[in-house]
Amino acid sequence: MKKVFKTILNTIPRPILIRASYFVRPILAVALKGDRFTDPIDGKSFQTFLPYGYGTQRNNVLSPSTLSLERHRLLWLYLKNETEFFSKQLKVLHFAPEQAFYKRFRAQKNLEYTTTDLESPLADVKADICNLPFSDDSYDVIFCNHVLEHIPDDTKAMQELFRVLKPGGMAILQIPQDLSRQETFEDHSITDKAERAKIFGQYDHVRIYGRDYFDKLRSIGFKVNAVDYTAKLSNEEVEKYCLAKGELLPVCFK
Image 1 (cartoon, rainbow, N blue to C red):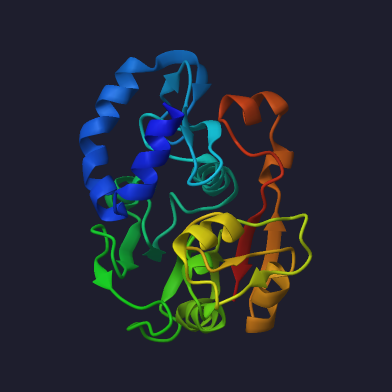
Image 2: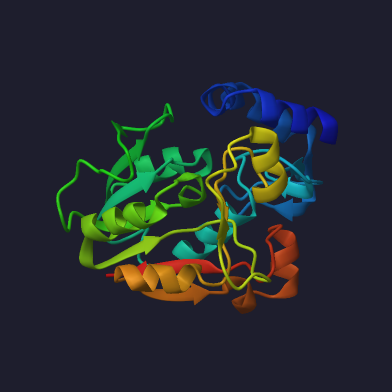
């Protein structure tokens, strides 16, 4: 199964994978049903989760029902337990919207919800993150998760995110991060897909973020909280929801 998943992830374009998943999810959810692990996003339980990863695959991380990964489930729990996201009237901008969230956020009556991306079929607005077509101080909440590692000029992208966020607004800007690395590494001369996958972990990534990621966000103007939300959960909950213990949520404010 690992080999099949790796081949699919590395050969089929993301927009096609998104469309195909609508047909695959119900079959997987039935086949893997059990009571060992639970996806907190929809409350469904399974005997096992699926493996996932472009390079080295991680076992037991992809939910069969929502297709959420560890980072999605962590974000959901944080929003649900620590914020007013599900009750307060909010204007929300969501970059490269994840399937695990898209329909649920769209259905929330308290949200004025806009999605944006250059390629995703789920995007309301096709836009370049480095040149956004939105006014200053427009959004109460911005989600931009696992996007910045794809952007050559991430400084410009961060400046645009800060510009369109309202004063007092919250932006959650998750990225794949190597916490053992102090400084972010990037080399724009590396253009070969196989070499990028080897060095950056994925063929379409252009850098590996280190612990200095939070300082860079602060230099843009954000107030940044590096939230280790798994530290507030029991070990049993971390295992039950298949979370990555110690993963940090970059919760940013303007």
